[in-house]
Length: 278
Length: 360
View 1 (cartoon, each protein chain N blue to C red):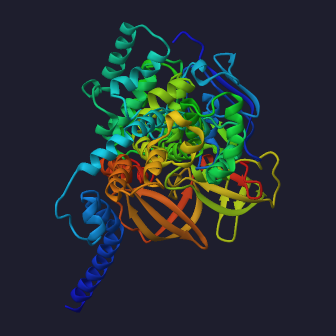
View 2: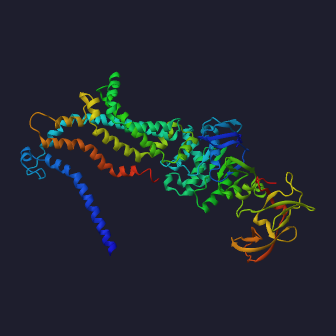
View 3: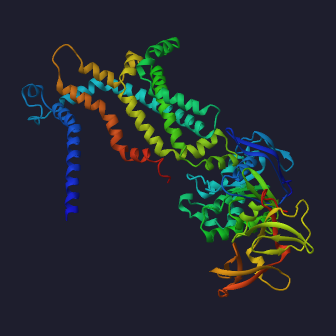
């Protein structure tokens, strides 16, 4: 009896904590959603937590219109950056894991360091380098920057995943006469689905949420959605349209949010994929 | 097989970092011979196999296959096929694709690939599994597919790296017989790594017993069992294990004697060359060679039977003569005789130098 009661008490404590944390995280989102559905008059007069009296979707339409160019730019930056960084990271991780290159462990160490140095350190030299090649302020330029910054983490991610695959598989393929690319394309990459999903999530959210690199490297014509959002929200002249700001912010956050919602299950599975061999 | 398929390894050196796993190793495998590399884990047997396959870098020496120096050739150019312990089937491919992958890579014509896959599938009775994925197969089926993948290469040399270790005892015995049959049928040269002495004794034409990166003895199963080259081989081969009794050599009118505080055993031969009277030696007797004293055997002494283990076809009796512990095989139906006079045929006895462990 007392054991059951203890169990119950533990349950209550756990749920209280979890609900409190969920409210803490979801609170701001709630404010954003209801504010985006209110008229300006209601916002300036009313309670921040109150539901809208007369809901409106007008702020959403305005924001969507203002952000449409930024959205397209973000997509144009995102797709090549994600594909290239994952492809190169997978190949590099495969080469480092299976092809015992001389100095491979040193390379991994350098990559690890590369993954932890703050972006800001690289910005000025990168600006000079891209300007030298005439790529500063171009779509190609920003894709190169995102790919480069994504590579250390992608390479380590794939290398670690491949270290969980049995090396005999690789040996068998070599005896079968397959070379570097054949083994990668026919055997190793088809087994990479779980880790590719993790990589896609990391890269999509990372690149979509990026502000600094887009602002510096993308150039006036290719400003990503985050930069556009900032331009809308930080206008210094005229009235502040909180409802439009909120709608614009939610729209910008929608892509990574969607990615998480769709692939959350896969994400968790991918992270633990190395632990238990199927 | 008309292609020359003898394998010869000369002065082979393999290092992992600063550790020498194999040092100046030599072994010759004749055409169509079935050679088993046997030893405990870490003895270098798998390393040797991988070096022959070309899957690890060697730091010195030579590997010749079919009279051709392949030391620096790629695995695919060595005329070999290999079967791995973990099966190493390609998990994203069907069984059919697993079998045909190597042939496709080699650019072989489609009808020939189909013919070979079908032939291997028939031989191994995996014809109805061809469209399944490896994950839908049992352990025994997976190993058959792995063997099939090696067979379709129709290579003159097959390398097996502990292929039966992951299977249960019954399947292991079944596949063992099948591999033996397969060898008879295709007549290829086979080098087979295992740590299981039964596999080694049943399969091999010759066994190479390895320890610490060295080959201790390389001979037929019969010779290795009857005349082990040293104490290590003698103890490693045979189950139940050989009896070892410590003592010393003495010369007498009838020839050499093995003597200790509890027994005097006539060896019925002169002192072995290179030995001297008084030398510390170890007498090795297989349990089945320790018998009831009688005609033709030299007496060991009166033994107390402490324990009788029934093993089905026969029983193992744990006996003691003074301080000497020894086992003997008795009839399966035997009752514990309590006290028994034991003897052994000196011709079956092995004698080792206690210090070096070498056979005298």
